[in-house]
Length: 417
Image: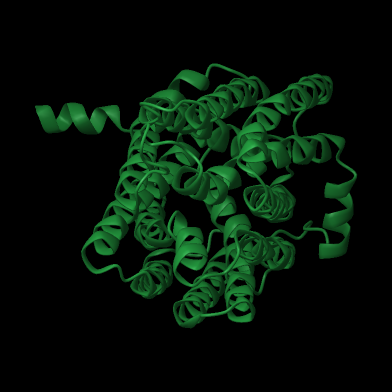
């Protein structure tokens, strides 16, 4: 009876959605090993400057632009399709981890991140298009939430295990090896368990024509502008915030900076709470238009940035606003990701989903270039500038809200494709 109630609460999707989610969970376990610890390792252990590490991590966005461009075309092509594109993405990402595991200077760190950006760029349009292919309009927001839930659970496990490995063995390089293995496991899941979902149609436009259709769609372009705000915010949480917590906050009146163990616990909580909140928030927001769900998300981002500023401003009990900030960021993330993906499907022609998701994914490349580069530059300056940075980030949500209101108006004035 209890088992029946549990499964009745879960959404009912095709088997392939659950298999894809399982594969994404495994690959994100590896990503969790490196996500929050790489900046600390390359700055505090290898000895590179925060700005150079920020530039290297941000460089993944440059190759990511190329990867997303190719990924969108490949995902919509008859030869490559969604499956082969994902296999190529997993192979390149595993190679990138080999390079990062061996890295000891700026050029090798830069090359490893360029490879990782290319792999991730190929990955996102194809995986989002698969979810869209396998669901109907009623299911999509929850389906995207389920796959993001798998990402979050994987990241949570990875962060916990990564923190444990660092605490016991202080072996940061092993984190990249484990991440590479996780991509190989993901490769196997896709190869053996996922069939090609792209349906070739006689009316499919050529790649060049498809890009022209997408780039003339005002709804997509305005959404892309709004999306850059969100992706820049996300990149700050994953790259700038851990180093800020380590080097700038006052853990107590006598201690400066949170320890690596405390940072591990904080970000473990963030990822775990993201996983817990994913489905409840998605079910609550499914009654909202996608644009309104994004407004809810950006408001939460503003609150979170103010709480980070509070964390850096207090001399005692900084852990309390830090936990609060990461909890709010978790809610902001789970409000953002399913709504943004569902909005792309809403406005994209069926035959151009890969290209539309490619343009949407370009926002991640741009955001993850702006965020680490800007954050690294700020953290290399003064503590006062580092503290003020979070208030400036909170102020940018006003521009984001105006952009989303305009997007909502033009989406309602034009029927979905």
